[in-house]
Length: 113
Length: 116
Image (tube, rainbow over all chains, first blue to last red):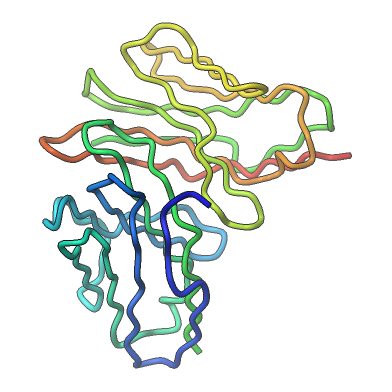
């Protein structure tokens, strides 16, 4: 157990639907990062939050949004889902002031049918 | 722009042998960190080893060690006494601080197969 909790582990939904992925960072970590990994692909950075504020955006579609709550958990909302959104979505967290060294959650496997 | 390159998409090694995975990066930052992450078939991302750029001594974690050449912007991973459990995708990553957050950039990965 890495200390970063992602739920659900698996999600199957239909095209056009909306889903919410949840992430609880490791205790003490203020930064949360979301990554998308399609089949046999590398990690695509989506978005980062630091203590409730958005800090950096990557290749995140307009159909996707995220937020970090006061208790530091984060949610990634994916709407108007398309087949191409099927992927493994990772959340990671890090210690403030210590550069890098992400701790990853186990990921949410999203399948859009 | 900051980039990380892994020029070997796939590699294989015999069990108990040694293998080296290559990584190069490009940055204008002076203070940064480098990492190797392992992603086994379970798809879990696991931090293997971490190197601070200001340290000249190469990091070592058990059978894993790095060869960090700052001037050449090279950061290779050596796995000694390879084990079947080392079969995984390996990602090289680079990280630097930007105001109050850190940004991590991942390479495309090298798929390593350990052959019995």
